[in-house]
Structure formats: structure tokens, C-alpha cells
Length: 157
Image (cartoon, rainbow, N blue to C red; front, side):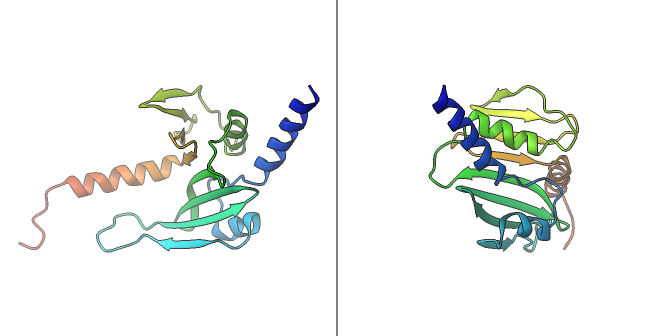
């Protein structure tokens, strides 16, 4: 019983340090995690969505954050030691990213566990055990960019 309690306290204390939140600015992320390990601007010619990826490490976790228009729109959490996130860690991260909304019960899609928040934000645990939380806004921008890319164009004729 005592070991279980110590383990629970440890999980809560460690995951409490690795909680980015959708909608945070780059400055807020730096305050939360410290200086990023890597930054990559993904706005290349032909890309329809200006994105930047920023990588942080804190508390035994790696946090990959995708920014667009200066705000966090997706976060991926993974353990530095390569272990999959535990159920308790996933619940803590989902709770930290609820922002007043409710997550539906998980469902399994092609071997991955998915959650949908009542505002359309999604979360999934990948086969490698990482958790990705993606805003509805990013999902909508990706869908619009895909439509534009698929549409035939006579530009340049």
C-alpha cells in the first residue's frame, strides 16, 4: 500500500512539470520549460500552413510543441527513457489540457487510443506510447490546406 502511494505521488509530481497547454504563447512555453532544445520553422515554399516546431525537455519528458500564429496548437509528450506513458500520466496530461472542456471516453482506432474533447480537440496515444494533443483549429487548417492541394489548378498555364 505504501509503495503504491509513493508511486502515485511520484507520477503526479513528475507529470505536473510536463504540462504544456494548447493556446500558450512561445514566451509562456519558455517560462514553463526553460529554453528550447531545438526550433524548426516549417514554412517552406508550397506549404499552406505556417508552423514552427519547438522541442523542450523537462522532468524526464520530451515535449514537442507545434506553434502557428504564435500559439501552441499541438503538443506531443514522450518519456526520455523511451518507456510508454502510463494511464495515470495520460489522464494527468488530458486533465491539464481540458481548458474547461470535457474529454469523451477513449476509443481505439487502428491500434491507437483516441479521445475527443467537446470542442473538437483530439488526443491520441501512439503505438510508441507518446501522447499527442491537437487543437481543432490546427485540424481545420490542415483539412483546408489538403483541399487546396487536391484542387486542380491552371495556374502557370
